[in-house]
Image (cartoon, rainbow, N blue to C red; front, side, top):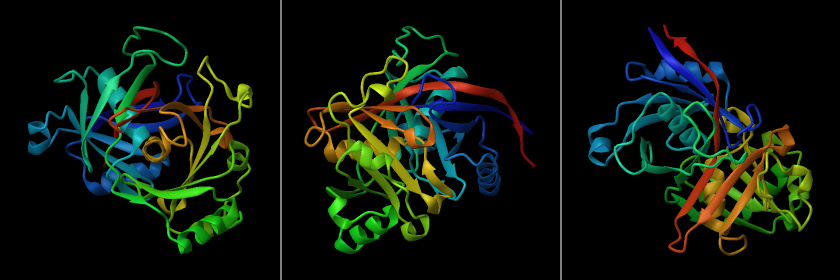
Length: 305
């Protein structure tokens, strides 16, 4: 049986500049083994499967259910697949039941909104054009300080000194993220990590840009990024993730409105020759929204045995 398929580039309005996600539509009949095998075959950071909401999801207003797979296994939540899947569902003719889109996934219900203006400043996009979408960050499953042993492991994995870590925290909203801040964006970009020393860590790194230091990183009319972010997840079969919504959500919950502004743009993917832009907004009530541009790059069909 053939299933409709889209590959969506997320966190960039310029195709091939962000982080792609493979989206399989009408996937209710697929088995776990089929999903896992296809995710390994695409070899992308994540592959998603669109399904009918469960009874609980429908009762909560879910428009669709999604299962999210890496080459190494299934995740309860991830950010760039959330935006890319919503883009694919809307482009295929999905009509939200309420004011925004509601996704059901492993962490429950996730709200999304259509912000309407991409980084190329094109308004009123038709469905087959780039869209600016944003999701409400789910609550952190684990937060708070990182113990000394983990900080030592993190420093070894990043090939830096423990004293180079400005601050650290657990920012886990599903994938298992732990994050550290370095002195600046240049220190983040200079990292050459050791994946063996990293072990099972799902590690995010963030560093601030100085005033006037980011002109060379501007893309498509986007606002200047405040930080550079990198994400390392070798245990998921992904050495470095190009652009990461869930990690940026956790960093926004951790540092937004305190160390960082309440609203800012994160750059991610620079070290991989990508140009990801993640728009983070922390509201006065503490809720964090994570947005970015999404654009379809491939449309077709896929067969499963």
